[in-house]
Image 1 (cartoon, each protein chain N blue to C red):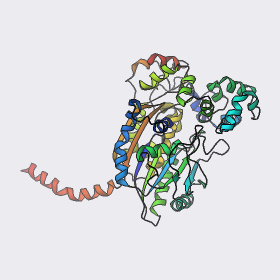
Image 2 (cartoon, chains in turn orange, yellow):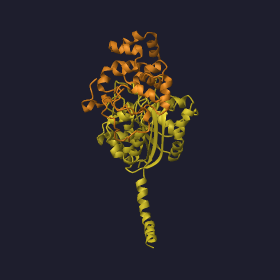
Image 3 (cartoon, one colour):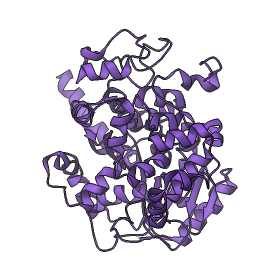
Image 4 (cartoon, rainbow over the protein chains, first blue to last red):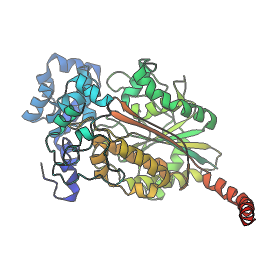
Length: 167
Length: 304
């Protein structure tokens, strides 16, 4: 993915986040329309009966098909899926939003639930891959209250680890 | 003349709807959330609006990726609850107010807001959860509701400024509707949350509380906040909060904050709720008129 150079894409600098922009929407049209089809019970049954066969109806790349079959939710987002759509796949498997969130963060259900009850994932150390935005932005004052996870600003790929620590 | 008397904002977390539908509201986890709306229910019962205008977003229920309207105003007579994959929520059909809705559409389009007009639409938890939170679970919703769906699913949503300005245009539209109606406008969604990707679970209470403060006192500055700040500070899905600015734009510049509630979490989300009342400017002006006497007396005392 492009680095956060141009202002337009500066959200690419946010760690652990796949922003559903026009480009991803275009690439992920097949994923999202497949997920949308799961709103109907008959389709849910047909999909469950033969997943790979069912997916052939949709314009999917081999990577996208693979991500769906493996329930790799982060990969689906990266390849253009949107969470409100992929959540319908989750619902077809009997899973809630929160269940999927835990899966995407690589936590166990218990750990994730405990993190949320303790106030959620701190924004400290989770603002920016480049470390450019250690400082709080307008509208939010400095966050000193939760020191545990307040690692240095440049904790780039450590977000899920740091969160585990903080709960 | 129709009149906007107040604005209400609240989160619209789907799990709140599920807790209501599965009768879990008395469980401690959920009681913490629902208890924050007891006062609001009383306030609503007293305010008795004739119409609600509800700013919300659709979550891949009425609109898929086939069609992504930035602002979609529901002008239909009714809006059935959508099947979100678990069957439709067991809530009443939302009755619209086609006359006022069509008037708003006409007025805001001529005012420069090219919104989409929708005559057939199902509504999901984004709309029905806030209705439950302030009206409870009646057999029928107590008043008609005009839904205004905002795209916050595909980036970019409309800017905060555009949302705020749309609120102002809606205000002008309501003000010019030639029937006596009491209108309450809802902004829904938020507060901080991220439900996608490895950063899911992000909550930023400092940001949320500052947002609530600024919503009441400093909305013009708040409207200028760029999308990147919502996403970075309040989570990728925290950007839903731009919808609160439509509500705020429709109110007076000075408002009275009647009530505020904030709790973390409901599922993945920080729950925020606020009631802002119009008409405080007029009252203050009246109070000022009365005030000089007191001041003069105090001065006189000091002098003595």
